[in-house]
Image 1 (cartoon, rainbow, N blue to C red):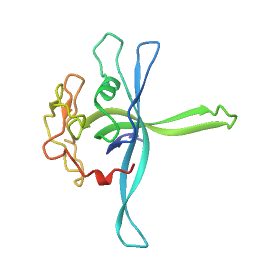
Image 2: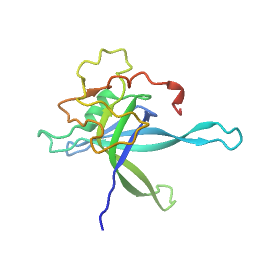
Image 3: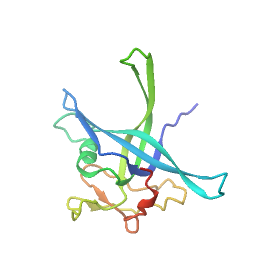
Image 4: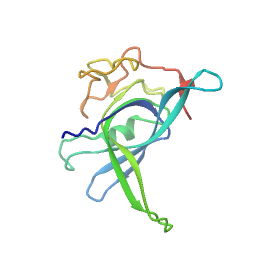
Length: 174
């Protein structure tokens, strides 16, 4: 029987990335992320956003000094709280022993495999060092097909496709 572990998300960072480096030269960027689910309020009949908060991680891949995926570096240098981004990744169950004697703890984490910026940098910068992705991101209301969003490696860091920047900040769940 086949298995599939793939996650595709569009949402916003709930905090600035937290970066750690390892003794072997590896690096991980930890990200708080929020996506909104829409649901109908039973009392008012209005559609409301129901935020879902997730923990995500981006790793630098490959051996130190060798070419490879540097997603942790990309996240550290390009993303900040409130930025909207598209992530593709997979789920990992992390487990640990509670330091206060509370027993074994666990949580699901999204490990980021691909990402795409959905808006220009909000720091007033000109976006230097970023190039536009080769294919625009499909509208979020449409189902994604196999062509999906354009993917990139560390050599090309895409900027927001036309028409996807400057979204409505009223939908931010934080």
